[in-house]
Image 1 (cartoon, protein in one colour):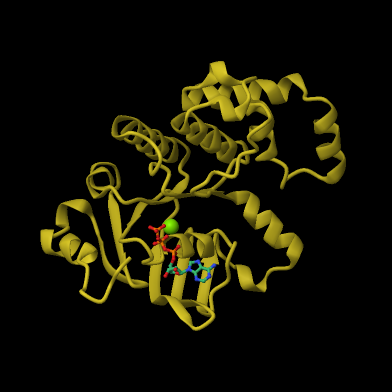
Image 2 (tube, rainbow, N blue to C red):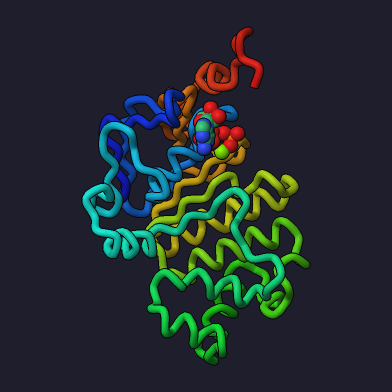
Length: 252
Ligand SMILES: Nc1ncnc2c1ncn2[C@@H]1O[C@H](COP(=O)(O)OP(=O)(O)OP(=O)(O)O)[C@@H](O)[C@H]1O
Ligand SMILES: [Mg+2]
């Protein structure tokens, strides 16, 4: 089992974000998290990625309970779980190469991090180039990252995630800032990479049609609870409608 949540709840202060969630995601599984704004998708992904800890219940990643780990072991666990945040977290004014190398920093010691700031080996450049070939932007290796389009920067973020050889990739709304055709090809890329490398993949997204087309498992969240967990073929129209239904007292 890759990721497992038991009776997991989370609150920011008195605000409940996730309520009593039970979830198990197998190694290599591909899961789309869907649901309206504020339903808890980012919070759930951040808990899976160990950036946030649950308020109640437990989360297990790759067979360990992250709450029990020492700082050192937690750091090691994080190198196996690549988290692609919605705003990517790339450094804008440096090259694509440099951004991708940063993805490996959690794995190396301080000395090799300093060495890498001074010079990049041929093997490192080659590896980054190969990853950029896989994500379809190898010609951008030496370009400044902020000169790339939003969709190209998403591909840099994916290459950076792959550079750490992750067992899990968590991507928070990777398609929110790009046009529909590029969104489709980006989701195709993520699911294909996950399949080829047997990487567990969890992606939050708003586009239900895209989720249905590419993910074998859809998890619908509303107000912090799981409303459905189903293969797309079994998703009923009323389930997805109910997910996005706005009650009169809601304004967001
Ligand atoms: N740092 C924070 N402090 C307090 N409340 C927060 C914080 N971050 C998120 N929240 C609240 O937690 C709830 C869940 O937020 P979350 O960001 O997980 O939703 P989401 O499903 O990712 O929404 P979106 O689709 O808009 O990205 C929301 O009600 C939000 O206002
Ligand atoms: Mg979010």
